[in-house]
Image 1 (spheres, one colour):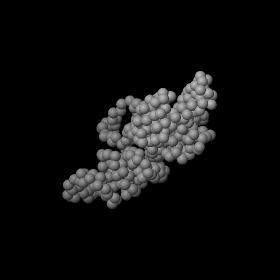
Image 2 (image 1 turned 135 degrees about the horizontal axis):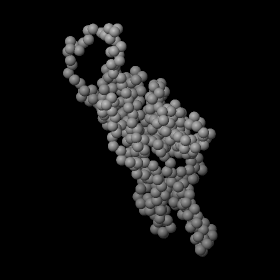
Image 3 (image 1 turned 60 degrees about the vertical axis):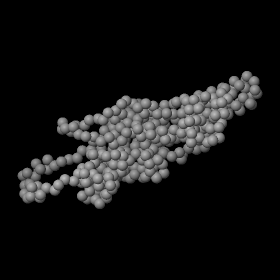
Image 4 (image 1 turned 120 degrees about the vertical axis):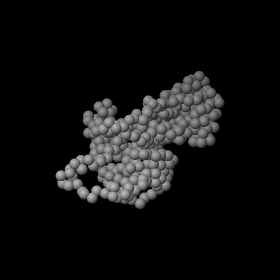
Length: 379
């Protein structure tokens, strides 16, 4: 926390930086997760909510200068653009903060924000980007505890789209007695858990507890504990250099025919051989399923989501566009170098100036390796 505050140029976690631009939003996201783990959830919520307004999913805030920088020099110019899973995890992490504080009103607001973003991704982007399981699981819990059974069942059903979650079965059975919402998934769970009815005479308690025994009965009433385990960290982005031929293979379908032809022509002339772009690094450790015990009894944990796998899947879907932008920058470097050579004559001086221009532009071409570093790998 101290190191993050130093990078944000603030004295305390209670302080926000004067300007939240560029990399500052990412540092705030990192600090929010550290604050959450330290139990300082109100400050964590504040940082997440500030970032939710600043971090954009779509490239809407880049100005002309930023676009020129992206294609001529570097892809890490301009405001940070978050992949879908990071944008959704802002709301998911904040849901946890509200639940820890027992603030159901704030949690419902956050759940609805998350639902709006998930719906947008399902309707306008790749549906797999919606990352329904963790947010929908927590949202269902929020509405269940708020006494809104119908909405809770809808959220739990969304969470089940990613696979069976046995820990939800008891909640679904309870809610089904209060709500009419049904889907084939919910019906299957309800049918599988049906048991023969016991004759009332064997279970009916005709003598309610007396005043003397009531406190003891209340003390033995079951409670419910929601346990959320977050562990590991998502892979970091790293800069990669690949030959132009391989880069063109990656960018097939995302690069314009004109740029592809120009890149092939330049490679054939031997003028350029490498393209710089960001890749996901290796997973940080090999993670097994954690264990959890309550009063000495081991409990089952549902693997709700692998954020690291969602990150890798999102990267694979977007790699073509990222590499295409890198190829465009490479072409710009060579064209700039050729322009210098022609302006300086065809001799040795022109050649040296051309190579110098290309080398300078290559040196400042730093692929965008920014990411939310403290996101957990698994939940």
